[in-house]
Image (cartoon, rainbow, N blue to C red):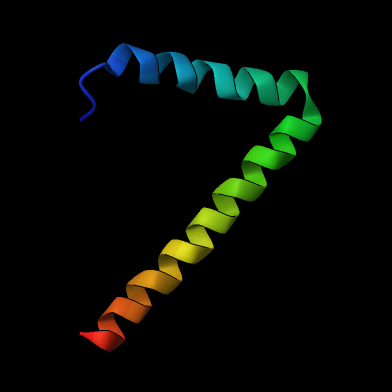
Length: 51
Protein backbone atom coordinates (compact mmCIF):
# COMPACT_ATOMS: atom_id res chain seq x y z
CA UNK A 1 0.00 0.00 0.00
CA UNK A 2 1.22 3.50 -0.72
CA UNK A 3 2.15 5.44 2.37
CA UNK A 4 0.24 8.55 1.31
CA UNK A 5 -3.12 6.93 0.58
CA UNK A 6 -4.97 10.27 0.62
CA UNK A 7 -3.19 11.26 -2.59
CA UNK A 8 -4.49 8.10 -4.27
CA UNK A 9 -8.02 8.76 -3.03
CA UNK A 10 -7.86 12.23 -4.55
CA UNK A 11 -6.66 10.78 -7.86
CA UNK A 12 -9.48 8.23 -7.88
CA UNK A 13 -11.96 11.10 -7.57
CA UNK A 14 -10.17 13.36 -10.06
CA UNK A 15 -9.77 10.91 -12.95
CA UNK A 16 -13.48 10.12 -13.46
CA UNK A 17 -14.26 13.81 -13.01
CA UNK A 18 -11.82 14.76 -15.74
CA UNK A 19 -13.16 11.99 -17.94
CA UNK A 20 -16.68 13.35 -17.65
CA UNK A 21 -15.61 16.96 -18.14
CA UNK A 22 -13.34 16.26 -21.10
CA UNK A 23 -14.42 13.25 -23.21
CA UNK A 24 -11.06 13.05 -25.00
CA UNK A 25 -9.37 12.63 -21.62
CA UNK A 26 -11.82 9.83 -20.85
CA UNK A 27 -10.96 8.09 -24.11
CA UNK A 28 -7.29 8.49 -23.32
CA UNK A 29 -7.76 6.96 -19.86
CA UNK A 30 -9.72 4.03 -21.30
CA UNK A 31 -7.14 3.39 -24.01
CA UNK A 32 -4.29 3.45 -21.50
CA UNK A 33 -6.14 1.04 -19.21
CA UNK A 34 -6.88 -1.28 -22.15
CA UNK A 35 -3.27 -1.16 -23.35
CA UNK A 36 -2.01 -1.81 -19.84
CA UNK A 37 -4.37 -4.76 -19.46
CA UNK A 38 -3.29 -6.24 -22.80
CA UNK A 39 0.40 -5.84 -22.07
CA UNK A 40 0.13 -7.27 -18.57
CA UNK A 41 -1.79 -10.30 -19.78
CA UNK A 42 0.83 -10.99 -22.42
CA UNK A 43 3.73 -10.54 -20.03
CA UNK A 44 2.34 -13.01 -17.50
CA UNK A 45 1.73 -15.56 -20.25
CA UNK A 46 5.27 -14.95 -21.47
CA UNK A 47 6.63 -15.42 -17.96
CA UNK A 48 4.88 -18.80 -17.71
CA UNK A 49 6.42 -19.93 -21.01
CA UNK A 50 9.92 -18.77 -20.08
CA UNK A 51 9.97 -20.20 -16.57
